[in-house]
Image (cartoon, rainbow, N blue to C red; front, side, top):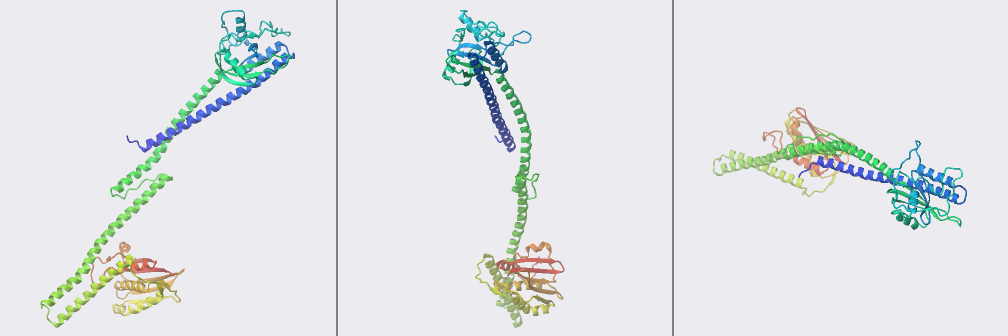
Length: 541
């Protein structure tokens, strides 16, 4: 089954956020649980030590039993925890008693619907067969048999041997074993209390032992039901916040995935159009991020491909024209020579004047054919880089001056003025002398062909910023703007009729361009119809 990228992104966002929420919620809940548990444990331990000191004070005779009872009951009320004082035989010496409500009722404590351990132990001692259940909380008094009125100023002191055994309470042996295993050291554990029948935090602190004091332990039993309820509320709050967070995540992730997918779909449309040969479609760029950069890059690629295709089509046309032009340029002289030769051989032409004329035409066409073949070979060698040439110090101004002298007579015969502007003290350059001469000849010959009588051709040589510049400007007919990019192509002619009046082969500028590239020079052509053309070539000194 195909799943769209948008759904994948949306699902990934939701899964990641959900996992993060679960991990964070679990960590936070565990942190809160451990923190409050540790805080409660420290608080109970501190109060257990304080209770142990008060019990020791009672044994030392510093306080009476009523004061001890009041203190233990205050600890119970303060901590909402049951306080037991047991001896080394795990007999109950004292326990916090149930607190009375202001209206005379009994303040019941959740989960403690039993008699006090003292009363239950006394019932067992008196032979009552079972434990009667009544009320909530701890017992109706601490050692009530020994102390009729714990609140009186002179409370009765418990008599020796009046402590009550807890051995008969079902399951209490497990708690006793943990106390004995502690070997008189303080400890705290979460246990299931057999007497109160619920999970509690049990803190045990040993009593200090002297010769006149029995060894014992202070036990504080704090129920965990309230703490568990608090944690349950936290879990519900976290779950509610997580649900809201996931809903927000769905909305935001859907927006983000849509903003990512939209430009991708646009680019997909562009790619499909490109595959079909349509390079006019552009991707919509809506963002300034990596996806936006990709869209812009794709648009540049489409534009470049469109230009490349147009150029390739133009090049293919030029190649076809090249084949046609080569065929035309080769066929014409061959046809003339074959025709004239047959006429001479079969005696059709017998008059001496005509024979001489035909021989002259055949000679001219042979020279033309030889020139065409030489130029083709020359161009092929330049393009392939197989010509064996060596650079040498060359004075470009001297080459220009010699060629201008060579063209003086043809320019005068045509009525064209040749001018030169050569600066003094020009440096020499490392170049191929014969090729530079060939370059100037081609450019000057072209300028002369397309400059009408009364026109002017100006050749300039100078330096600017360590660059030697050659400029050939004419006042001829000019080149149309649409033809300028293709004037360097082989057999390309602005004159589409391919007339032989100018006598060119259409290879001159192609050879000139290769010579320019051979020297690592730069060329610029500026032309305006009816005003002339300027070729500017720059050589590094």
